[in-house]
Length: 490
Image (cartoon, rainbow, N blue to C red; front, side, top):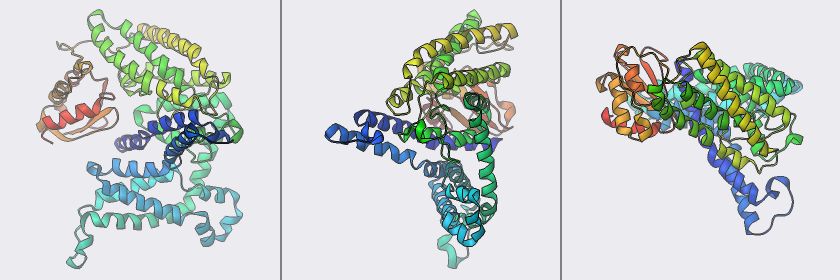
């Protein structure tokens, strides 16, 4: 589980590059619709639009490579770039050895099997990119300190990592030669099962997308539906300027339902949590929930909100995931279509609204009002009825004054409080961070005081193992991590 969470963090690194794609392609298409719809292009604005669309498309068209580099760096110790180089070597080796031309030469009978040919035609996909990243980073972590005899000393240490990665990739390719068609068919079966259910299938996907957030496994699910791993690729086809006529499903249906939930549903749920807080803790709850709601509305970053209550009230989190499923089904049925490059916030809605597959985007207003109301009243009902200990309703077992200092942008004080709650710098083994979380390894887990850590105004704390602690800070995590490292002399 700990490794899966690290993988989830590594996957967010390439995904974080996609907002620039949305910005470039959204503006570019607005200036030059002919880029994607066809027709004559002339004049400065059209040429500028064409230029911007192609710039953004460079990212979408090469998502597998972004995963290769992102996972290679993200899973390597100290995020060393040598792991990324080794991952690229692995990617090149696997995709070349398992290209259709090579495999049909090695095993001519494959050419007679249509399903296997399709599988190897799709070998350069995000799944293989992630696998190559894992191979490259694992080889770096294992062999970076290798010492060879004097006559081979030049290839000692980091220089041998890419070589080992290439050798490992040859064996991996030999295994995948027989296993990949089976994996591909499993993906096809799962994807087609969901697609075959239409709007209900989209809702089921959205439900599991949210339900898997705590484990990080939602990234594996997303690769089936958002990227062109098996021929679906809701996200990649949407931003390529295609429409539903170009694909076999209603383009955008696996993204559109997230917009009303993230832009309006989460603010409604956040307000319910504040209203249900104890009077003396309402100000603290407001500090936590307001920033989380704004972050979700603008950027579609939901972790600060979700981790604030998912472990305190897991039953409520299941309800939350169900609401995503219900709204996604409704959105799919009524024809609202929008797409995101990063997440379902207002920024992505704005830039995707001009793309050919976008439809009835004005419906975000009534859908948003409905989502705000439903999330608010259902959250309030469930919290009160089940007496859930959501933020601001906790039972204090010690006398500690909670201070939501994070909202004041005093990152030094936030880092200091977190460090105190972790048992001081002598108890810290390593410090890292992803987009929203501070990830730490400690020597003695008994010294960790979660109440003290929460007093810094963080959204939540996760304990994946005895020595691992994750502090959910939000999008300001980089500033907190920088101050934390200074305090630890790292």
